[in-house]
Length: 189
Length: 240
Image (cartoon, chains in turn cyan, yellow):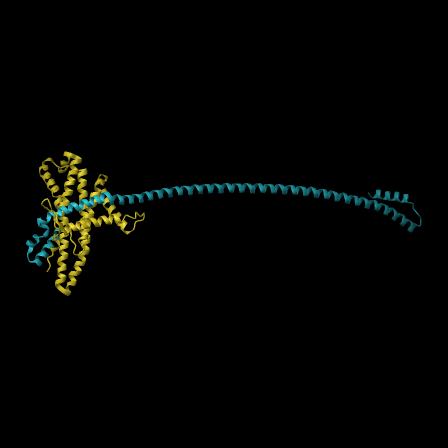
């Protein structure tokens, strides 16, 4: 590519300058008189450039690059560590949660049991009280009935005496009336 | 019409003679110093902030650094690290020489065969010295291709030697020819612009395109010169 371009350039120069290749051969680059000063200043400037680059510029750039690399690495390490911490915290939280849940479950179970025991007991007490009450009521009823019965006997005897007196016109003493009553009652039974 | 080759003329600025040698500071020398100054300011000032997140200039400086560092790592390996400052300086010197030369009225010192040849010879001699220092006589084995019948060796060894010796020639002429050709073409078309008057719009458009193309060439040739230096260095360090 370079050579064909040079050829074209030479042809162009030849056409314009009218001197052809001879003119191109007279390129300033091929004049040996310009060689020494160029070589001297090439050596001087390249030496300066090399020293400046090797001693000053390149170490600074490489330091900047290294610092960045270190920073990135330390940041990554820190992130890794924080991630570990976060995971540990999460595990602790999960464990705490599970423990609390178990505790709550146990408390609920205990409360349930206590409540049901108390209810059982209360039920028993109530039943006993009611039974007592029923027994007392039955006793009262029996007493009342006995009293009523006793009363009924007296009333019956009196009624029999009064009836005899009104219908038959004679008096029956109480003892006779009671004996008759007893006889009738016994007969009926 | 202006001579398209006039731009390659070396003009003394400060005449100087040391020990009978003409050491005048010329426009070429001045542009070499300008390139050195520009590179130094670019590389030092842009990383002064030492920003963790680099700005544009610092990115550019780091990019240059890593570009050459990767080139060496890929082509030479870890042994090439010692030569990084040299290869970096070489790359930047050629690149800035090419780029500065694209500024109108500027001088392109990489368009001079003596400059490119001196750099190529320096690389060639340096690389050969490294090869001999590392491998001693075994370095000569470099010229003996492996896996070739013995009968062919009298033919192949001279070819290998000639191809080795032609390295500095091809290396220097490639850069010189590219820069000279590109700049001459641009100047020729610029001459057409003046000559054709209103019709000069066409060659002007060509020159615009050529300028863009020359930026590519400026970078590419600096890259090619440097990458070949790396390959030669690799040959010297690892032989085959």
